[in-house]
Length: 275
Image (cartoon, rainbow, N blue to C red; front, side, top):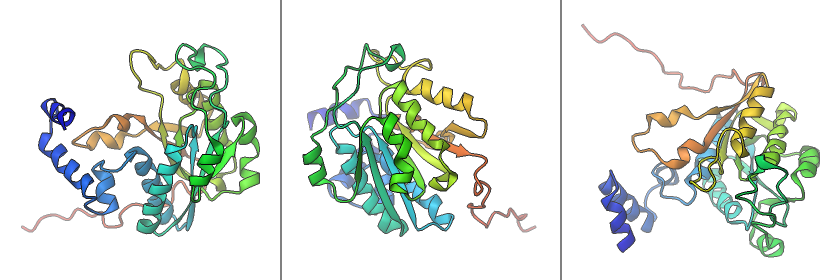
């Protein structure tokens, strides 16, 4: 409680924070309400999956997939299962979940672009058996991403990917994961909601556009003419900004056969007011 009160001193919206804390404690409101107000665990996971599911529904799809690159201990994957249950009921859509990881922790960094001053080989190892026993529906895709990425689509034949959580830490691993966007378009929505975990950090990580996940994003955009990872500018309209808003990117496949399908509100007239 003391830490919460200290936080309110520096909170520009203290009454808002108190109301949300109350709603979270008593689990008040619908899932969309709780998600919109950030009173769910990992709201960035829920945001990407919920909006990906809504887009899929507008496109007439009944099934989608969500990918998590970098499972570590498994808390994120378990959280995705929670969001998937809520969103499946809310949007009336089936959701497949896939988690990619070595199962042995981080590999050895290849060079300076993998930030060896911050990451060490073996970080974030997984107890595979324990995690498997706790997963309800998510599937683990274990192994080196350079190998699992090559046959994932042919082996699993997933529903179209609507959301991706990137947490592979390294530039090299993230580049491999992004190359999966080169798979046939049937495996992706025309726009995919993506979260990148390691692009802000602190004075220790000092993430920048020339290393890590940020470099991978930039190089992907430079080498793909019709496929781009774009900043989520819609958050600029939010009155209360969250740090994770800056970690959301939208993958656009401009050449996707369904990219131009109309999914907006059909009621967009602006009649003159009565004289």
